[in-house]
Amino acid sequence: MISSQQLIERIQKNVGVPWQSQRSDGFSDGILFGSGETTVTGIATTFTPTLDVLGKAANSGKNVVICREAPSYSRGERAPAFWRNGPAPSKELLDNDAVWRAKQEFISKNNLVIIRFFDNWDARKTDGQLRGLSRALGWDSSHVKLGSAEDAYDARNVYFRLPTTSLGSFAEGIKKKLNVHGVRVIGKPEAKVSKVALTHGLLLVADAERILREPDLDLIIAGDAVEWEVGPYFQDLVTAGKAKGLVLLGDEASEEPGSGEMAEWLKGFVSEVPIEWMPAGEPFWTLG
Image 1 (spheres, rainbow, N blue to C red):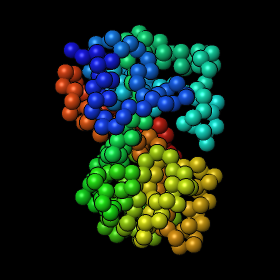
Image 2: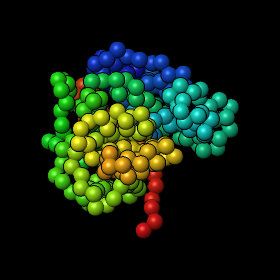
Image 3: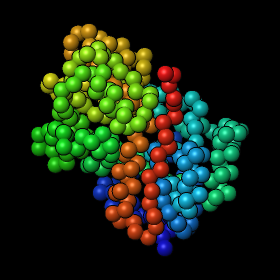
């Protein structure tokens, strides 16, 4: 048997970096809901613990959910530019939210333990999110390792050399491999692309500028972006001939495969209970 606190301690022992817990928003890595004394019956990893994911975990006998995003909502109380450091919504605000109350009641009724694992997972030498996404796309053998980097998946190594194809066909191929619908593209469909940068989550202009320093780069793939800023920036890049375009997968679609990678990583040192990746699923559907 293993308790949820012992699980945390085992993760801390194996993560390979000094454990950090410095968030001011109340959502630092560790147990967010539930007791450290709870005996673990099974572990589910997921991008975000939606009610649907929590239900699947409970129904399959797994009482610990390890997530990248917290189960509650900021409700727009924090400015996007300060999303990491802004204060969490007040307890009173959340307690008066009927949706959040229902979620809390479900967690309590089913004796679930919610563990957030974000900052320390990202602090590792290996970018587990990037590795999971590249594997989901089948791109492992196409990775371009830069310089003397010890790990092919460290923070700098986001570049991939792929068979030349049109931007339209390329985006369609990604859509099919990840089985997502909400892929959005900036650039000319007929433009030829080969060398691409694969990222996950939010892309800021500063990130794009750094990534585009790599010679002969055609395209950046990301999760989502500050639309009013990154959109015009890439429109101008394409017009100026500095890049072929941008592909946005959606935040969940770009981050979820990392939860699959996390599940495999956990299996390397947790053998007492079953571990399963439970995708939260693409939140949007699109018109045909």
